[in-house]
Image (cartoon, rainbow, N blue to C red; front, top):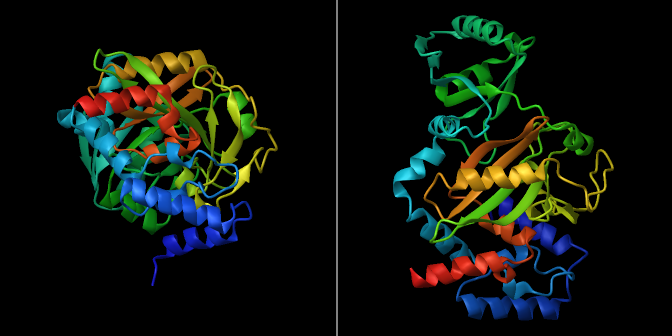
Length: 350
């Protein structure tokens, strides 16, 4: 029996009313199979079967996706830990005056580090006493909590000064079993709150650094959360919308991943804000900050998560092993992207 996720993908595919005719779908699927010498599952997950996609050959195969990231990682095996470990990454950014959310304290199971001192807690009462101390000393209302080495929005939660004593034992056990960091809650720029105020809506920007060290923006899209979720992550049901890499103006169409309903949106379902040409704020600063930070690392390819506050953009995370295929989908095929073609030529010479 197929796993639940694959059943959901197939069900969405068969129910999709925007499919090409079956003859064309089969023809294109077979063409990609012989071209790539492997089953092109991305033909379905990337919605290449839909009527509005004619350039299906411009999209990356799974092998090309993996090869691109492996090639990039080969330039910086010693820096993988630097981007995977968020504590080390924050240290790098602070050292180089790159704006990023402040980490107040972090833990490894029941051992906590705060202001240069170590603490060990035996039970929930001692933990809550520490939280009370930290809230008062930092003079904040909330802590944003996420795994030090986490991915895809898993085990993320918010501690509130007024309600943290009500958290259940399941969350307490999670804290005592994980390595977490507790950082400042990002205050989002008011114009992005107009689209969705329920989560911080982050940009995913992919940069390419060539052999001479010049950094260019390869692709970009914004992740928009939906009501009832503190996450904007596409894997959590969020909507992704591409934007112009030069101007920061959003495109017309927003998408959900196929295993989250494969919805197509032209406005936000909760606020009604139309995506087409919505201007991402502070975009000139966004471009500068990602280019500056990309120069600090050896990877030719990196995916950056950027949030925009009232004071400008901040770097949330760097990703070396990221979902380049989603960027491929939002760019309508990276193989027709001039910057990506420069990268392909470099891979061929490698």
